[in-house]
Image (cartoon, rainbow, N blue to C red):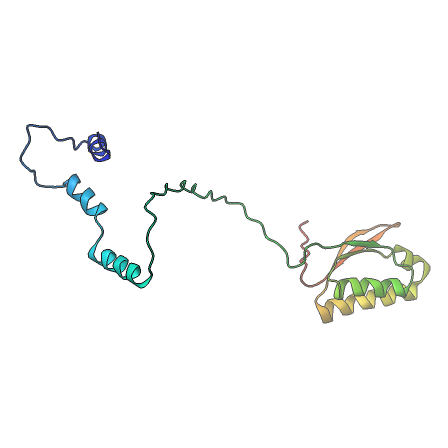
Amino acid sequence: MSFTDTLKRSLGFEETESSDKKTEGFNLNEFLNNFRRPSNNDVAQQQTNNSQTNYRPNPRPTPNPAPMPDPVWDDDFVITPEQSFYEIVLIRPKSLDDINYVVDQILEEKNPVILDLSFLEKESPANFKLAGDKIKLMRAKYGAQALLLSRTEEKNLIILSPKKVNLVNKG
């Protein structure tokens, strides 16, 4: 039994020996023959290609490659940042040099920084005021963001981030 006979039988188009007349409507044999027969354009193109290149096809039949599996589409996706990772520095500045280091981390390295300003607040009010002025300047001029994390007697934690790192206060 050939492939077309099996296909006919599975689709319900099995012909019986007694039906010699053709019925009007869909003719599966004609459809399959037309499907397997190359069109005139295909034959002309193949002859042109063969005449242009002295290519002789390999007489051995090549097996069909294994069918590729259908791709699986998930709803999950990954967003990769421009910077491969962010280094979040936790620092307790004790001098203006430490504050300048924080400014460099934010503006040059584009890394967020968590500051504990409690030491400067207790030991050097003048340096604490200068640190506050530098934070205000970074926010106004460079678009840096500042968010107060905690303010107690022992801690005064602020997170500072560059413009590209978005801080969101959710509560």
